[in-house]
Picture 1 (cartoon, rainbow, N blue to C red):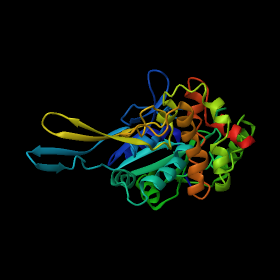
Picture 2 (picture 1 turned 90 degrees about the vertical axis):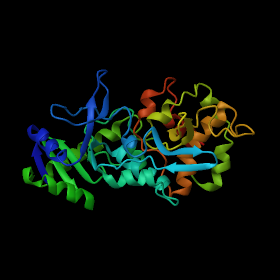
Picture 3 (picture 1 turned 180 degrees about the horizontal axis):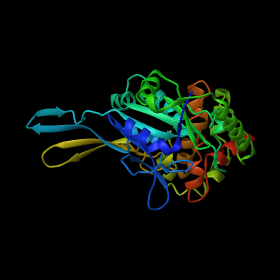
Picture 4 (picture 1 turned 60 degrees about the vertical axis):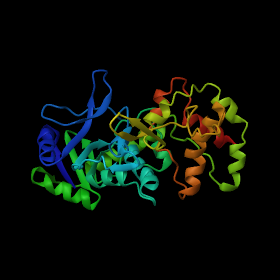
Length: 339
């Protein structure tokens, strides 16, 4: 394990940014953390988590995937992708780091999404442990250790020092690039911090959250539960929960005619919207209750049933903090778990 004084953090950032793009959480004018490209003078946020997750780096909200030029009956396909630069995302929390493995199961399964794949290959993740989990956090219920985050390199801040440990080959190569300013140390301070974080997590309101059984034999029972009508009654269908969620991956394909060519875009979509999956004959889920049920059945039942028990949620708590009517996945999990 290696360590560095926090007073030299800008020096570390300068070394990393010398040959690649570096992004880290930065407070905006509203006091909320969002990822921003580092440059001299930029200070890393002390917030627990960013408003939107690091998912944006690999699965952006909008992207131009192909262009078409038409001349009579001839159609020319134009690859609109530009060459990607290597980049580093610094300060990713354990919940968001786990979300990448969920997205990988979707976008790197055959047929592989080459847009996502290319970004994953060019990106390096440096995670940062949590020392002050908030009341909306419940990642530990999903098997995530906020004090020992995944990633290419894990880091911990304790007593004016930042500690680093490489996890992957990519991380080892990255760590070697700034090893000259680091000091070798033991993991004593990190172990103390990890134990302290576990104690905090155990005392949080959702620390003992019971998740619903994803047994396929009970799928129809959960699907037909009368609780969906009551749970969905207050839902506005605004889609806030899906747009801040680090694991949501639904998208739509839209064509835009510029007058000279047609540009095809991939855009985030939400299962909470009335026109989601709308087809020529209509929408298969008409009511808000059906749309609401689809979202949470996917995260709590369908996804784990098809992925060896791994839930489609990482317990980041963003939907708990941002839902305008205080309806969230924790309330749904409790209701289904009680059954």
